[in-house]
Length: 353
Image (tube, rainbow, N blue to C red; front, side, top):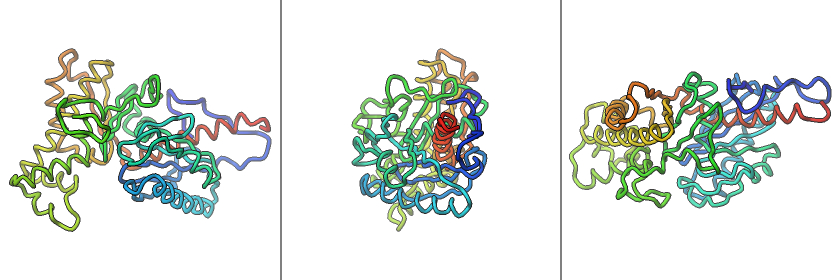
């Protein structure tokens, strides 16, 4: 895989002897396992070509076994497609929501994946697919994807935030995800913003996730509408497809006051969290991605205005906030990079080389 300026491993050398397929005929699969959707990409081992990309429902509400079965089936289909294209899949990288035991590939807990507790995702997938499987936090994978191929290429050290079903975060420092003393560093989504706020899925109250995620945005909108608040969003409340973050975004663009106020809360809450991290770590670059980042136009102004109020020890112009570039591809590309780097490194350390 392509190596970052400050990366995980040195660029591996090609084997000169021993039995091996040429690297151009090898591929890896990257998976972004989110609370609502799962994105899957087939990537050649150089990391320069996205060969196939698909999206499937995660089925998180059905529990880990259903998710595992659904994901395994999708990956087997993709592995067959890779074979038809002349590629051998040599590894699968999975970016999963939640706290991950990186050494064991175990999902310790995940607020947005109900029922996941000490679930051995890596081993269970390896048994089914019969290829090496690496499991990493999903937002870490998104940050790696953006760092290598997207908006993070010129940022250096940065705070990454992913706005989706929940709110995830990571810190890229010296080209690597900073994990602290365990595997839960960077979880900005569970930073307290409103001490007496709504109870989050994690058990805490007033988390950033309850104010700036797509699922909670819809929940807050529904609560306001059922109280009788006047808004154009009422037409969607009882519709067959219900309310969605995208519909709230469209309403905000059209001038709906309730929708705009909801996104004002998103932007202001993000600003408070960012200011806290900036003051603590002195980090000056912030990258925001995830599905809700598509509503950039209606919350970024609120974010900047609140950030100017909150940054008391650093000049606001010193802080650069950028939108992610890779969209749905980021997490899958990042996960593919990680497993591809490991596969290439293991190939160079093979005693038969």
